[in-house]
Image (cartoon, rainbow, N blue to C red; front, side):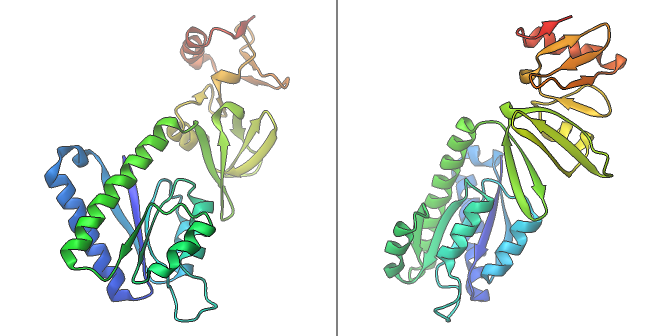
Length: 265
C-alpha cells in the first residue's frame, strides 16, 4: 500500500519542520511494528499556499492521501484558509485524511459546521516529542481508515479530462476502444460514452477488471451479453458489438469459465 503525505503551512520553516517530524514518526512506527514496513508512506509535497497544493493535485492523481494543513494559510482574513483547502482537496481525493495543525482551537467549530471530516487537530504549541507522538497516533488512525475504505470501496476506473479527475464505477463500463482522435480512447458505459487521453495498454495494466481482447479493445466481462465464437464477436446489453482477435481465444475461454451468464453462439 502506498500513501502520499502532503504538508501545507504558510510558514516555510514550520512546514519543513512538520515534514521532518512526520518522517521521524513514520520511522518510529516501523521500529515498533514490522507491519508498517509493508506500507509506503511518502511525503509528496511540502507546500506553503492554497494554490501550491491545488496545482499539485491538478498535475497528479492522488488517491487516499494524508494531508497535514495549517488552518491559517495567510494573515489576510479574506484569503483562502486551510478549511477552504480541505474542501477543495476532497473534490480531488474523496478519501482524503485531513489533519489540521494549528495554534488556535477556535477554528475547530468552523470545520464541524462545514463538514470537513478532519480526523485530528494537532496543536503546534507542544514540545517536539509531544508532536511526534501525536503524529504517530494520527498516522496510524489515517492508515486504519484508508485500509477500511479500500476493503469496502467499489471498483472503479479513474481518468482525467483536462484538470478534472473523473471516476466511473467498474460495473457501469461495457468496453473501451481506441478513439479516432490520436492518443485518446473511447469508453462506452451503460449511461453513454466519453473520450479521454490514454492508451489501451496503459488502461489494461491499471485496471485488472478489464480484459484485453484485441489491440483495440478492452472489455468488462461482467457486462458481456453474448459471445459469437465462430465470428469472434462480443455483444453488450446496448446492442454494441466488438471483435476479438484469434490469438485472444484463451482470454475468451477464461471469461466463459468465470462468467457463466454469458450467452454463447
